[in-house]
Amino acid sequence: MRSLTIASISAAILLAAPTSAEMIGGCKFDRDTLTFAGTPVEQATCLLRKVKLRGVKEDQPLPPVIRQLMEVGGAPSAAQKEAAMAAFPQPYQAYARQYADWPASKTEAGLPAAYFVIHDTSTPFYGADKFPRRLDTDHRINAFTPYMDGTFAKAPVAHIFLSRYGQIWAGHDFSEAWRATKLESRVIGPAARGRFVHIETIQPRRFIEGFTTRGHTHGPTPGFSKRQYRQLAALYVYASVRAGRWLIPGFHATVDDGIPDAHDDPQNFELERFAKELEKLVSPPQIPH
Ligand SMILES: [Zn+2]
Image (cartoon, rainbow, N blue to C red; front, side):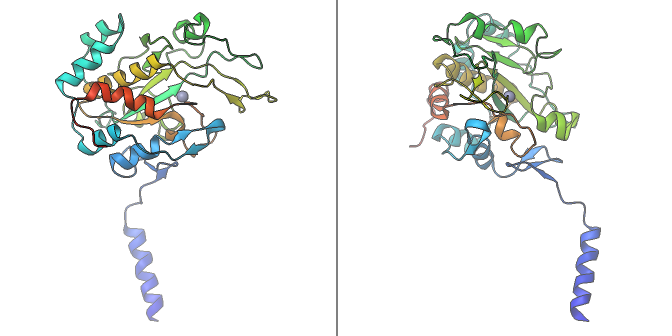
């Protein structure tokens, strides 16, 4: 029977073909190529969806400056590299200059760093208490000590920690293959290490009014300080210099989208403010409007 023959042939082809690539999560991460689905513009659009309360993701337009960098590709220019490093505070600036020519991490299979992941620390945790009035200068909120002294984990959880007054501490150099998402540590494993660089941006948390579980928390509004957006932009350019290519920016919650118990950070991240700071560093290249 003709139809049976076709079915048999199809089955034979399916069996003979190599296993189709496994796609993981909302932005369809390919386990073999360690890449999200689509062009860099499409990947950035998926990875920069707004992360709302309790990790709900919402589409938002890609700012023109990011779209342009994703479309044109290549690496930051010497002028952009200098602008980024000049924006850093000391002592991080001296450190960044010293290591500027060291390549960023690679995976064990030799794939270069490709993704710049923005987190919020969700720390300190205030429970049912109110947030302090002046978050950006509060000593307890902005202290790096708990990230350094083993309070949370044996080793620093990210490459970079960024306080609300714009101070930077490097927990791991960008040359070190590190992981900070469930996608890397639980789903892919060591093979993914080196593909992502991670920035922890300090922002406190507390319970949503009426709730007492860690799955029901919120961050302050606005979420981040002006200095954090400025330094995030400088770190993005600098990490791209180290990687030798414009990294694809994304959020922890969108990287882990679809993975059980995924985190919901960063909260209240204003993509337009990040893009505005980025424009200052990557001009004079003309940004289309
Ligand atoms: Zn995170």
